[in-house]
Image (cartoon, rainbow, N blue to C red; front, top):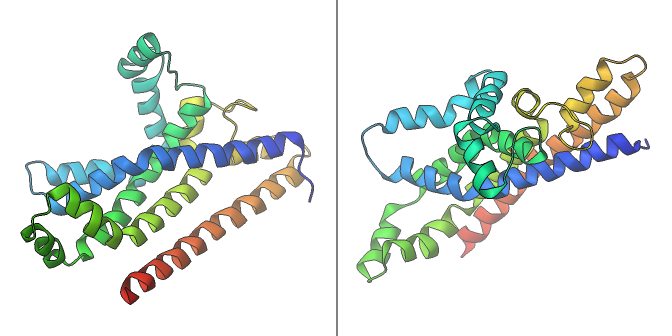
Length: 230
């Protein structure tokens, strides 16, 4: 099942976009999960709802909001373009941003569930021994939630690989620049004789997504087993 140059480009771009999305959203995901799990503050319920909104809101709406915010004429986009030369709209970086936003709820939820399961007495014991909060988190909490971080990262990666609605609305479908696997499949289904190419890319998408889910489960179990043995 040989891929054409255009199909290979779309697959590699999808991998690049998904990896970038997870790498840059992971620190924010950990911080957000910690805030939602360990802190009580006014508006917490609203913030939790906003974090998970991309899961239930139409992806096209998310993409349109990103375009309004991070487009060249958007409030944030114009500022980034003028002062830093950073452009998101109709660029692969915008595809990564859209993928990060769509996968963020899965990342946060997985890490938050791991944080909720941590025995707080372990953190308290470390604090009573003189460790500051940052050191407690780095040496006690973080190792205990690693399975959740891994699981969330892999699921967010798989979500980013399959993202379509927000991406095509925000950055369009430009071959070689913003055309990911999902948008390439859509393109091939719209042209005569494109069924075979669409099927090839569909199978590749299924394999990558299934491998990501299996890897997430296996890695989480292995990490949990190692920490249990320790």
